[in-house]
Amino acid sequence: MLKKTLLTVGILFAGLCAFLGITWLKDTWPIESTSLKNEGFGKLIIGMDESQISRYYPEISDAGNFIVHTKTKEIICLELRDKIAGQNFTTKRGIGIGSSLADVKREYGTNYR
Image (cartoon, rainbow, N blue to C red; front, side):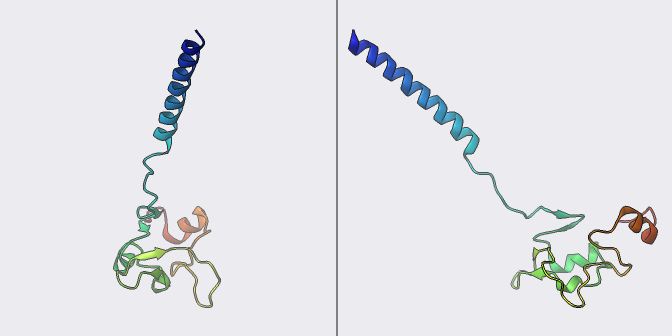
């Protein structure tokens, strides 16, 4: 009788462990891609070819100062970590990160991209 009870408890415990393991595995595997290739703001994204910057953002005055991959000429970084003399990260009309919607409307009107 003791063997039957231990066998039943062991089977139930193994079933519970299998259920919990499968539930955990479904939540954590496979790991989804963490690529940032499609992340960005507006139409400016990481991985964009350097020549496309001027097509979508012709007025970025310091477009040449984006950090780009040297072989592929793709943008690999969009952040401005340190203040660099002469680097504004703004348009020719003074609109940049942190500009309000009112500033954008004042400079470009309501029809802007």
